[in-house]
Amino acid sequence: MASYRKRTLCSGSCGFFGLPEFSGFCSNCFTKDGKNSRNAPNNRPISFQDVRAFFERGGSSDVSSPTTTNKPKQQQHHSEEQQQLKEKQKKQQQHQEHEIQLPKEKLQQEKEEQLLQEKQEKYNQKQQQQQQETQDQHHQEQQQQHNKEPQQKQEQKQQLHVQHQEQLKEEQQGKQEEYQVQQQEEQQGKQQHKQQQQQQKHVQHVQHQEQLEDGEGEQQQLQQEPQQEPQQAQHQEQLEDGEGEQQQLQQEPQQEPQQAQHQEQHQEQHQGQQQKSQQQQQQQQQEQEEQQVQQQQQKEEEEQQQHRKQHQQNHQEPQQQQKEYCQEQLQLQHHQEQKQDHYQQLKQPQPMPRTSTNDKGQNALHL
Image (cartoon, rainbow, N blue to C red):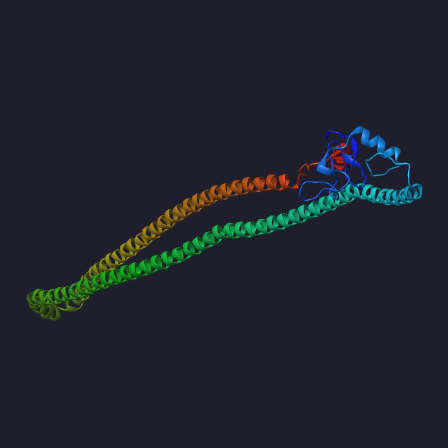
């Protein structure tokens, strides 16, 4: 609190009462050379006696002793002093009113300044919020793009995987077709070679049989000729004797079973060769069928192995992708929590400095 000082009278000619204690002269009476007006030479301080004389004179600024002579002049001087006092009182009132108005104006200025500060703070907070929102939106867009990147990569991986699988399938199909064509050509070549061998064997066998038949016919003829000669002689004799007819009847049934046996043997040999050739063909067909079954089994096993490998890869890839996605989600949650904490801290009102009424009154008195 400011120290209170008593009010004193000006030592000059103005007669102003209201200066602080031990001040001496007001600004109007104090000159540049450090001296007052004519009524207070050498800037001497005012005393209690001077004040009492001032009031006894009726507020006159003359410090000298009162005179009894020249009463009309004294009355004129007294009227002038009264006018001066009235003017001084008016000045004092104006000065007091001005002093009273000053704290009010200051209070209004302070209020206006506070309002301006509050408005500025609100404006700054709005700008900060807008900036934070724009930053959040930008960050969210970046995060969305960052989240889309693994999806795009995954789609690209899937496309590449599908393309790779299609290429592998095409290559496998091409290899299988080539292998099948080669095997078919080899089998056809083997079959043709076997058929040629069988045909050659059959031709050789037929030729051999024809040779055998030709040799047997010659032998029979050679055998029959010596037999026919005695038979003819006997026949002639029998004819002569009347027994020729009976002998002819006996020879005919002997020749017929020999020819039938020869034909049966030839047919049996031919049938045996045909059966052998058929058996060989059946064996070849069975071998071909077994080879085809083995090839199909190998293909199925290869396809199963590929399917297992693909299944393992497809099972491993989602696990890794899921781990990466979980890590990204945790990072996003942590970042959002930090943002929310920062935003709540900005929202919390900050304490403003407040001035009490006593301090305001003291400041006004000090002024």
